[in-house]
Image (cartoon, rainbow, N blue to C red; front, side, top):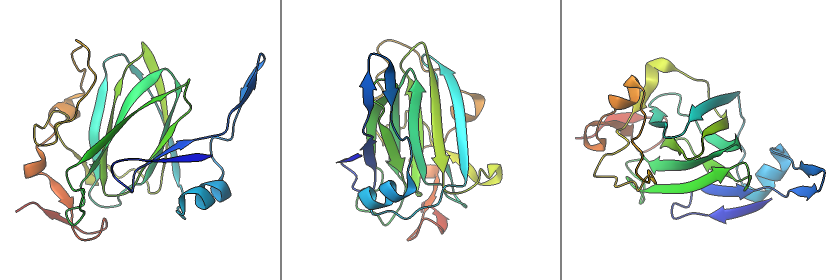
Length: 192
């Protein structure tokens, strides 16, 4: 696998080796030993999730203030613009974001560490989005930052489309009013 650095050092783009011919293709979508060797990360995944979204659906920016989740995300059908936002107050990249297109064609994956907000915009007619998490879903601790917070300035490639949001995502708060991660992603505190 190939690891591509992003503007935020802890967020990584992962390109697997794909073997293909006229019959189709094969690749390992995850191998614990290869992941550890390539990234230096020794993480354990406890849950796999699968979502399907229509074009223009924007999900996020989600995170869990307790039981924070690292996520390894990919698309198996269609394409999305995937975003990670650093919510770790002590981080030199706090409040910065990284965006990358993930698609069934490029087979890319994105490693989103614990302590980050995460969201995506569906670019294709539909997209099937898969992700592995390092902790279990805990709805009591789930938080959402507004996808269009001007302080973040995320450049979503809407290309004339209106973002289709769930009620939960419509209620996302501004970063200035959000609970964020303190010195460690396990501890949380509100912004002063």
